[in-house]
Length: 110
Image (cartoon, rainbow, N blue to C red; front, side, top):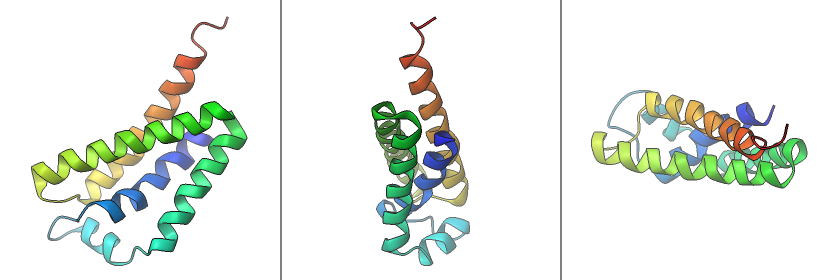
């Protein structure tokens, strides 16, 4: 439950931090993205991650955010901004980070 929520909170965060590419879905998304939506998305993701996974959820949420910001920075340099496809990739990457964090934390527990 936590992984999809964290993943879907990443586009609003990325959209507020990085400029969109000159045209496309990233531009439309950014134009309609308010600060309030970004705050709500981040807080909701953190709350769900904490409720489901406890402290591990907070760590997973933070790591998902770090990886998303790294992706946004890289793609901004390569493309001159973030596109809708980059936002979609951020969702999937953040979900993967949450799942890998949980798997790593439980890998030694049989």
